[in-house]
Image (cartoon, rainbow, N blue to C red; front, side, top):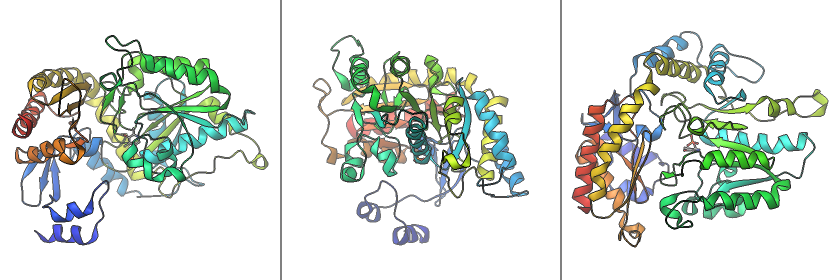
Length: 444
Ligand SMILES: *Cc1c(COP(=O)(O)O)cnc(C)c1O
């Protein structure tokens, strides 16, 4: 064990980690990165097969983003947005609104995905108070939802292992079925979107009490990359509009090119009332998040000081200038390198590469949405009977993949592959081959 690993094990408590197991096992320490590779303290290099937990877009040490942060450091690292405006935060807000779905006009900054969703929930709630419909207080969420780890976002979450224990601390929500065809079974052979019918039933009966629906569009990421049938998010938008319920679209995972378009909403021309972004916003460089909202919601908060309609929410590092400078450089790279246009061939290479996984024993489902791919393992594929969680089957595949030079991370028995958008088609093929070898070794 090297000195750094010893210090880590002595002092650091890791997120989503059973620390007893962490401390008992050898752990990799990352010291550097270059392009789509991570380099550990032993000098070994590995593909970053999950984009450093879905945040990295253009690879590591991207010259333009490095330089933008250095340039901003030459001016100022941080200044508060409470009572002051800043150059990068203003410039970045303008550019964000230019690329956001139509109808979104204002940017409220915060620091991470959880805070962005927390802000959206509070805004939606307060909005109805201001416009004279104070009974609209409830939120609709999807089963298996994940929107972050703060108590507000855990309230709108639905992942039992993470959220169960905090139940007494949470506010109640109305949960509707997760629209994941592989797991659903409600429509037998052909998807007739029974999930949408279930949503409409809730809306028809309770819309007078419902403030908003919170949803990840196209892909429920942390739930295990659950993918929605085509037309679902469009249907959700139409129904929420029909029943006068706000739609909060959480694009923290899907935003900034992940699904093949800049935002997942664009696939079905969805114009949400509120939208949250974070992970890809600085291309994986610095923590930053934004909650976008419409003019109508913004206007509902306007009034005299004495009306107390202010949105009383903010964070110490809200709109951090270094992070906004990184965000501006991120968008510049998207434009200059025509990143979105370049994704079409990469998405196709992933699709072809995944084909061979379908023949591997214990592979229950292979699914893809743009640059997001997932392979779900089953003990019994025909009966859709999962492995016992304690067998940690997918986790073993991911650990084995390190031997073959790629870092990936599972969610339960779902193996996730989410390479940086900058990965070349050759790199993508190479990454997929390495994952395939690891999978063969564990379950083949
Ligand atoms: C990761 C994620 C969050 C939480 O973001 P953090 O930055 O980890 O707080 C919220 N929503 C979605 C869809 C996410 O994928």
